[in-house]
Length: 44
Image 1 (cartoon, rainbow, N blue to C red):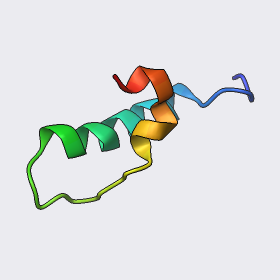
Image 2: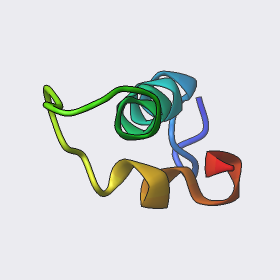
Image 3: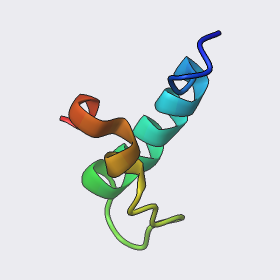
Image 4: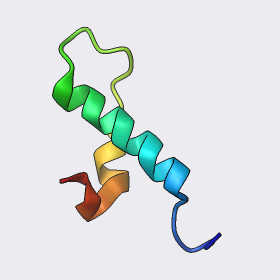
């Protein structure tokens, strides 16, 4: 485990939360507006 980078588990969880706002329709279960920012370049 590299303490300087987020874990794969954290990145996958953020990706799932970010995708929820892009793929699913309202009403959202959880509107995580920070998830895309956490992913950085990997968000695209």
